[in-house]
Image 1 (cartoon, rainbow, N blue to C red):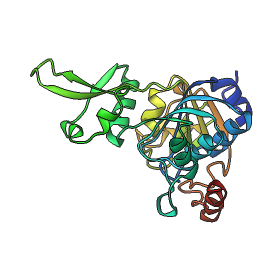
Image 2 (spheres, helix red, strand yellow):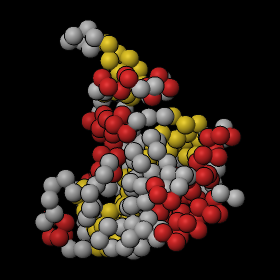
Image 3 (spheres, rainbow, N blue to C red):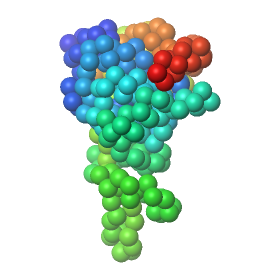
Image 4 (cartoon, rainbow, N blue to C red):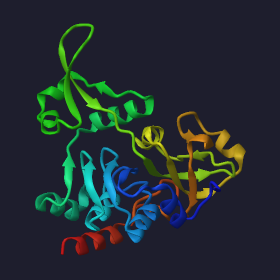
Length: 256
């Protein structure tokens, strides 16, 4: 299978029905909306949706379409524009199962998945909140083998596939974020398969010149989808800002 695919073939070939799907982007920035819309168009059921620590329309749309059974997300919302109405409605009506997590815990869980670890201990302050006690499927108390003290740990997250948006890819399939990677990079490392949506293709030497930690090598990338403007209505840093009018229009419809 060629590494460069259109959204339809990438979703059909690499997103398993009922699987664990991670969708990147932070708030309304760098969401892989071309891929998200294709998931909705193909009616791909998601057994568990894993997001970044702060997600927005990329999760709310899929939840509102009735495609998500479980959600792992610390926050779903639209920042200054308001709450995520379809997410909130689904939780209130019990049509989705929410596995609550904190932002640091989610990030640690993805790091554990990327490192092949079954779980990872968390800083002791998490025990002062009720988050770990509310979600025993993700959090457990364990004994420190060195001190014998009890501490909280979080189970590793290893998505079947991660969908993220980057700025650029070269002809070999190497990609560059072209922005702050947020948790998208560790999400990509934790996933068994990776689909990257990009704004444009660039020469190989352009990706090679990027700083370490801002790129992903081709051997990690299952497919590249070239989709200029594909993050809209969220922002793609360096290319276009978020489309506030479109986000407001979405919220108006979603609240009905």
